Figure (spheres, one colour):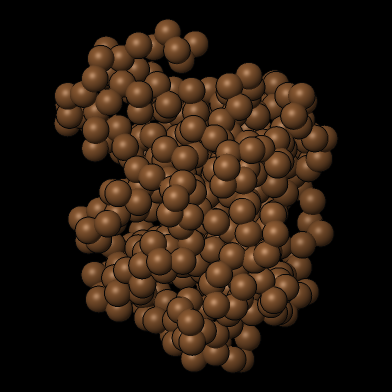
Length: 392
């Protein structure tokens, strides 16, 4: 029964990526300068207003995974071209990468942001592995030198640069640094990347966790104590799942990873899922009260990623049901009649915000699909019996 469910999920997810999404997103709106579309209108027309560098890095990842899963388009040349554009057109003289380009790959916002640098590092890792290009790992080390030299914080972690409010420290860019360092270490085997990933894991365990509940906090003061008032109690369930998934991937290298993953997953599932709509909400407080009941697309993908990663470890029926429900939740966001496009924001009443389709979401969906497709049915451990009646 488990094999049948997983096989069905894998077929549906892979078919959407290879046969539906990539034929559109790989070419629609792609510029002569080597940039992927930032966003599309709801009829599939590209909006050429701006191109954020972190979105380009995300598209690099999505294109590589599509190639891994059987897309026969020119994924290697697309990735190589975009990486060349980023390294030659988006880097400042001080070594940082800029926030935004125009369609000609001319800098339109030259500020540097930690979140952007994290995704550039991630792109160096995944592209270096996919293209067999060791020089991209050297590029990543050079960017790490720049970040450490300019933004290292005396109380752990990093300053966040020139885009966001410097009076508030956030866990989110540090989470994506962990993702980047993990990808770089896996691809290159260089100890520096592994040590940096462990530093981010320890920062999470020491500073980001609300230990009484197992929740992940979002906003902090300079010394990593939570900000005052309600802001210091805000939890994004999607980030709980995202950190938990990263922990699962590092379980072989960090003793506390599984304990942390279990706590984060438990909080997210207990307090972060609206049973009426079947989706993960945006924000709750540490006591479980919902403070933002809207539901963006990306938390649904993180719910699926952690369910798949846990199922690989546990083989439990609960995790398989979570996988099924999460995939169905994601499918709610695909536009009727245009499944290569999606809604990004669901309102509390289940309706969607009418807006352009953000290309940044493809990275999240693709990450979830990759996690499903990496499951090997014959290698799944025995677990609890499955009751799929709860997944309908």
